[in-house]
Length: 630
Image (cartoon, rainbow, N blue to C red):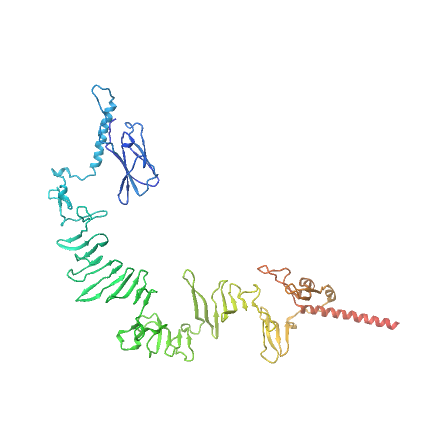
């Protein structure tokens, strides 16, 4: 065939992460004629892939009519970080031998000519990437200077454009789209050399030495530290920062023989030093220490314990002669510290919103006598009280005087309790936590004796216990029940009759009471005629009494004996005497027992006695009549 295309490469192909087979369309004689190169995009590093190990080849059967084929990467799809180029690497040999009077086919000559064309195309691929002078330049000798003449020198071009070698003290601008590497060495040997930067004939920067011992000097040819800055090269003490072993050399400066800032620090601190003594330190965590290189907090001040015991003193220098202008932190004893103003100051105040002498509001004051005033500090403190709390801004309206605030895991504040002026003449202690887990507890010492459950939990009162008996009980009381202990004690406040407990209905009308006198207790339920209507005599009482089933029994709780009625049985006869529902349970499955008010049985018994009296009297009359006839 004839080779009609000058193309001798396929690609470069950029990896997609999904494709492993790539095609080419130029003629080769065998799979080993191919050259496959992979390049890492980020660095430009190229790798020549090996046949069989890195890729396989599938050639088209007829390379004359259908030149080319494809390669398949053994490792799989080409990653997106690589590019791939396919070309040929047919050896520069002529293996065909034509003998005199020998027999051969035209195809043999055709393949030999194709091989020569391929070799020429391969040379063109390489020469197209080499440096060459344009044809219009005319005759120029592009031969490099000899190795001896160009060793340890820079390559540049002379006035006619020919290659030249020079020491390189004066060169033009160097521009690179990637990394620019400058190397100073001695004919390839590892000898420390300086890299020097000049501005015309003035040295501006020097990189001294090599590796771990290298130093950079700006404005000085003799850098002392890793980085040395010198605005005056003739100064005896340079400016700079650097390391010497594990010690950080700090910035230093000398003027008129006075050292303003100098010294060394350990390698994990930044600091200010005077007279080679550390004064201020900043750790890698951002903690600041004054007088200490190991601050335990974001700001720590360590005193050398002067004679007056003052660790920190803030003074208004405009009025430094007045002791009242000072704020001091003082060590009174070894374990006793104080913050305050010197003696003789009338008050120690805390302000908010104050940025000038006249702006802002005073919120708290400690008076010279020791009283603490919160809120309305403009009001004089009462010397008989140690603590006064005002909510001055709200006047007489309902407002919180003291509030306890907590924060949840997200950092959001939430009020959990407060002391409140509820209204004029009323004061409230309030737990503002409304969740079911919230409550208000009262302790004596370390023992809890009373608790109000949260509103969400029902708001019950618990005494001598921390939980409700069940959801129906508004007051829950537990006690040991010894012979010398009472669960509830009520004392009359007069010598006459007093109401100890009053019961009212939803309308506020009294419907019952427990009253006490000096010697007795009475339990009463409402029975006033003004509260009743449709009053008629009770009949059939004897039949009801006959239906009653009084019995004896043993209590399960303590095995004690008892006598009375079974509630649901009594309910079928006298329903008003029974409370609750048969077989009822609470939310936990516990029994909600029915109860019997035996006082409600009395009217039925009384009516039965009256009915029985009528019968007895009638029978007595008949007996008397019969006896008279006898």
